[in-house]
Amino acid sequence: MYVYSIVDFIPPLLDGAAVTLKVMVFSMMLAFVLSFLFGFMKLSKWKIIRFIANIYIEVFRGTSLLIQLFWLYFALPLMGVNIPAMTAGILAIGLNYGAYGAEVVRSSILSVPKGQMEASIALNMSPYKRLRYIILPQALLLMIPTFGNLSIELLKGTALVSLVTLSDLTFQAMSLRTTTMQTTEIFILLLIFYFLIGYPMTLSFKWLEKKLSVGRV
Image (cartoon, rainbow, N blue to C red; front, side, top):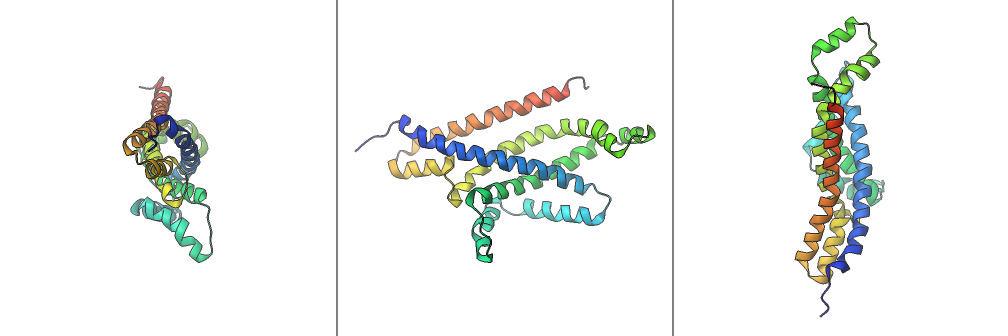
């Protein structure tokens, strides 16, 4: 019986890592855009806009990411809408984490002291300038730690795309385990691969938080 070495496992896991990174980057971009879009919508003075934002946030936070993924990939084709596995994975993860991010944006903006908003109004600053120069710089500093945590959770969530036939890290690891029956070595490598992807992200958010904190009390 041939005994596989760790070196034999690395090429397929690298292929899986490329898929995981692609899903992570695009779903993170989508989540980031949706976070600010619906975060601002929740702060709108228009009730209908706040209502739409609430529906999106509560639906995607209140239901399972796995079910959302299955719904996009398996249920929509029954209605005549066929979505590729990669697109379904990116959409499901982006929509799900965008809902959590929207609450981060909303709460961070509301955490900026009201006195500063009142002072900017007294200085006759336009709404855009108030947001650009007064509110967002302070709110972003509050958002970064939570966005960092959400990004790591999003990375972990990408493992679910293996259930819709995408050959990501988890899918490749499970395939190797079935073929070789060397569970321990494969799963140790899997942990190392996820750590090597996630740890630089953690350091990047810490660096960004430190960078934006310069000159602030």
